[in-house]
Length: 448
Image 1: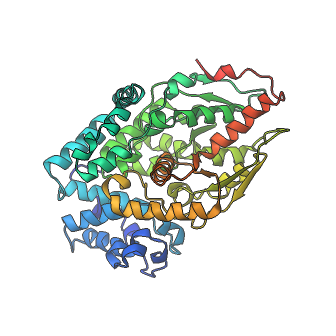
Image 2: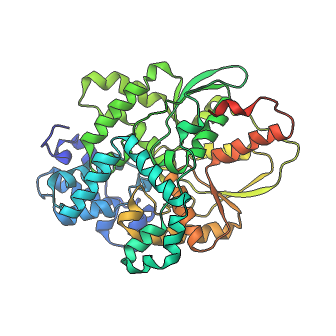
Image 3: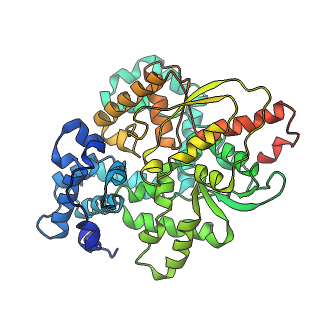
């Protein structure tokens, strides 16, 4: 996309005009379901986008607000009989809103500049912030502040945000995982693991578990200690050029021709990572490698089922009842629905109970729960109600945002619920093989 060129007017017009206005998307859209307003539906939003593409409407604050009221859950794409690429429209519409500057204010510009242009453009900075937060938590300062009553002096929204502060892991991914981890037994594949941004700070244990599962399924795993953000946060929030810059960095760091697969365990990132060719379509120098990259990126559930997962063998397995929440960008964005269930079903002693409305958004949606707290809260309440109905002790989901959203909701309501990534449950089953004296291989190979 050339600087200064309208994102929506510059799109292939066949993408803009593809919507038939049939309305089959309406029952699947959480915001339309809540408000019953046409403008809060995919059909209504596409009408606004098309009006701008046609030159009948200029971007306004109302248009921009509507684009940010959309969750970007992509449930409409699953429902659409015409195959409308709402994901592409949605990203370009938000980029159009940002390019127009109709939402600009000193406060908003500062927050976006700090987060998107500074913090997430260099993960060393993000890790530094993570170290500071970890120290604040480990020294007991967070507990002290919460018990002191000082938070009552803050505005209500700031108190809510403070309550959502995630617990930073004791060690980040580079401290848990060697740059090269050999396969257990015969090496069949050479794969790379993307450790992510928030995933690295909050769920580095999931990255460790992912490596453990991969090596037990014949994969040599390459995990560079210093990685870059994949750019999904930027692309989903209108920063198109920053997303392109980060995509080029990823392709340079993980040359796709060198790997059988490039593994991601974060649904939101994975959905973005599989579309670098379209993101870099105006850069002929990157096009071939971007297309190869798209073909090599695999969600961890998808990859394990594709290569044939080895079931854990345990003689004594404690029973556990698990329900599965489908992250929007896994089921709607990547069309991966059966594979996580197949993975869970190979775990001995695990009973999988289907979650009502499993594909309905939990309200996390990237940073949606930060910028649209009321709607995000309604969706979280709805999700927790369905989780309760299953009587499951464990809820599994394949996206860090969903994990954190449901963890915070369960904590708020004192709901005794363990919330985990499916890959963690599988890794635990493999580790139980060693406890069962079935596996004698030293587990220390994963650690520094």
